[in-house]
Length: 230
Image 1 (tube, rainbow, N blue to C red):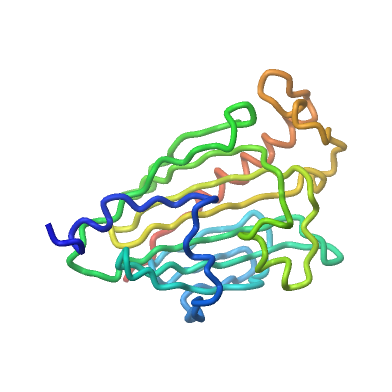
Image 2: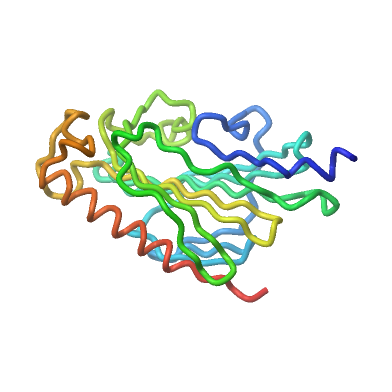
C-alpha cells in the first residue's frame, strides 16, 4: 500500500504528544475561525458552537506535518481577570492534505486518572458522533503546551482546574479536538485544594456541585454544535 493511503488510519490527538508545538516551524493561521461573543464559528470544517463564556483569542498557529500528509491548526482562547487565567480553551483542528489518503480516525479519549474522571461518553449530532470526558486536572504554567498563553503575559495559577475534552471527525477529512478548562476557584464556592477530596469515592457536596455545574456547561457546548452548509 502506498503510504498516502494508510497515513490517516490512526491519527492520535492527545494532550501530551503534540507534534504541533514545534514553534520553530510554526506558520500563521488564516482567518478561518472567528469568535463573536460566545459564538465560535469555523469555516473549515464548517461548524459553529456556543462557548460557556466570552473567550478571547490570544494566539493561533498552524504546522504542516508532511509525514502524516496533514496540517494542524491550533487556537488558544482565554478568559482572564487582572491577567490571571480563569478559563481557557485550546482548539486543535487537523486537516487532511492528501485527497488520496484514507479517512481520518482518532484514538479514544483517556483521562489523566480514573480517580478524578467524572463523566465519559458520546453524543450524536446528526451525522457527527462527539466523544467527551470531564475530569479534574492540574494546571501547570511550565507546561510546553501552555507557553503560548504564558508568553502573552497571562498568569496561569498552578493548581486544580476542571477540564472537559471532546472531539469529532468531519467527513473523514478533519479531526476537531476541544480542551476546555476552568479554575476551580472561579465558581464562587470555596472548594478543597487537596486532590484526594476530588476523587470519585470521597468527593463532598461543594466539589460535586462545582463539577456538575462544569459538566452541564460542557454538555451544553456539545449540543450547541451546528454544522453549517457548505
